[in-house]
Length: 348
Image (cartoon, rainbow, N blue to C red; front, side, top):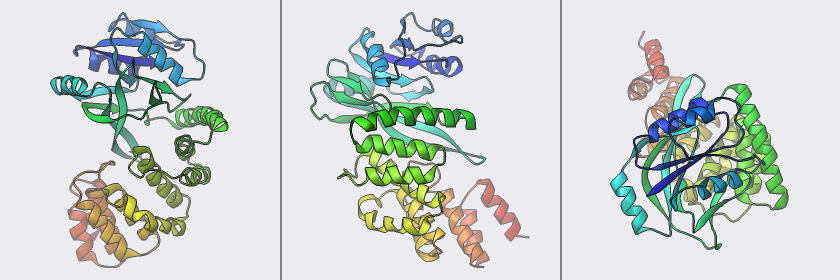
């Protein structure tokens, strides 16, 4: 059996969506409230009787470990209030938990994003299913699962898919969240220089569009000897590249050529390299990178291996005055509205 553990505060609407997605699943649901002043608690009681209160102390690990300690079962799945289950294979999940009792299950999270007026989705794997007798959380924020005895551990891909709306924030909410994260991360960083903490500081500054500070922290984190296969390292490299482009440092971003061997096998990195070349007016290499990305089956950010890649190819050819090839590229974008608009102009 498995217990789903959630910490929450003033998340009435988000939490209800989460609990509703769990209501027909054979799991215990544990909700720990950290100081709500809205109707979160009364709403949660419609879905579970396992509700507890925890006095907030600026430490997400302590709150999550408390929630897990209140569970009936030893196997825990930790979710956030702004996540909800899209799909789950119960039979396969049960088999994997039994087959890998000392490992951690990595669920798939699909982040909903808005870039300009466009909705996007990014995919990632995150450690969320574990035996509480073997693992616990550490870190005030962006907490990580660690083995209680300090040993390294293996993971497996759990057949659980959740959606996440935590990045769909108003400008005020985004700034407030980033400032809170920065404050807690700086407290952690003052204790120890850890590349993961530095990377999260970089992402927090990126979140509020302070790209220079983001670049500073990404650069510091990447000065460590890091495993390029780690997901947070891959994500940091991508964010670093976009921070350089967004801050007008496209020329400096050409240094990413030196890490192509380690990261260039992914559609997302190839798309990023296409943008780097494009912003440096190196149009032929840019087209080649976008084409490479478009040939990949999988990607993290929706569209980089399809319509977004072809759209940028179309933009390049249009700028070069090659209307025929621009039209060919735009036509491969399907229903992507910006491409359809460009086609209308070219076909007049």
